[in-house]
Length: 414
Image (cartoon, rainbow, N blue to C red; front, side):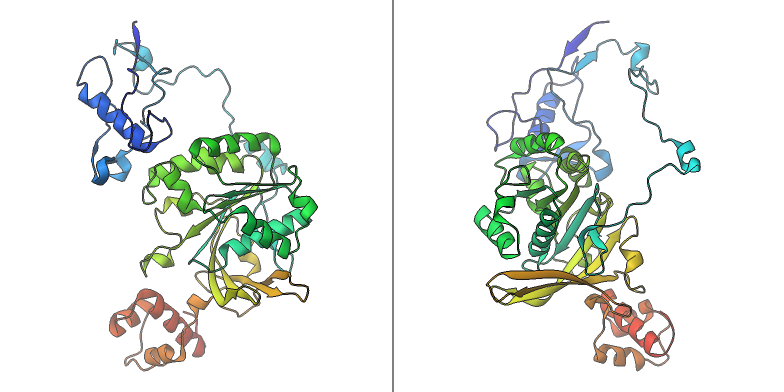
């Protein structure tokens, strides 16, 4: 059987002077290069793509974009003889290493690790907001307290003897970041120790991949990735593409999680009123990839220099249920607590996460008295939140909160 190499890529995107195998735009340009060569000994990598705005190629549908992206042409070899039985569909190649199948016997023997519990960034009752060894997320509107919450988590982990990596893609700056950490009580001798604390603003995706490789030996206990909104463009990715987010997750987030660290990504809300209720802006794959908690941050008292502030923390997702089990029940997004920041007499800042008590509700689940009265005035009474929404011509979130509060006032559950 004759084996030939794919031609080297001469095409590239406008950002890079030469082909970058990590860049989605360069990959799209290479697919076009292969397609222009026409049928023949070279396989067509276009995979159902079509031109899109800006010259990039996009898949005809999200599901049509498979893992079939151009690899390094120097490494790929292709058999010319399609009749070779080694290339027939369904054949599993000989594996040099035994796959790591799940040990079902250990499950029955009771030797498996216990279900993880959140312990990172503890509330005042000792229950943490985030899980170690998992990808967690905080999201909310700008200046809502997301970064300040991760600053508090950083200070607490350093005080406990942990090792923290801060990847600043949002250009907060080292002076600002270190200044906030010192104000919150982080010791300067710990922050200046490269064995305990590292801060970096990656210039490009290659440097970011080098950081991920370095973490295999540095072994952080906490990684703050600020922000996911800046991570995706760094790889030429679209925030609305599930496949492109998944590629970035595999390249950056998953390797960081494999170090055993608690990885916390900071993300933003979308602009649409209805879509904001689901979670971070962009593809639903962002939520699917979370293996720990996803915390919605909503400002209570605006954070002001010298005066502090506060923000509500609601549970958007808790894969293992450890935080949800220790928070009030009844809401779609239970209230985990409130993040509070206040000034000290010495000019520093004190921070804490106050655990929610039974009966407390997330602000998005609380309806004003006027809305409750409007639902109560419906005749005949509303049979469901959707019924109230249709008759009052409200948005779903508003109708659900008002209907639920009305039912609670009448001694029934929604």
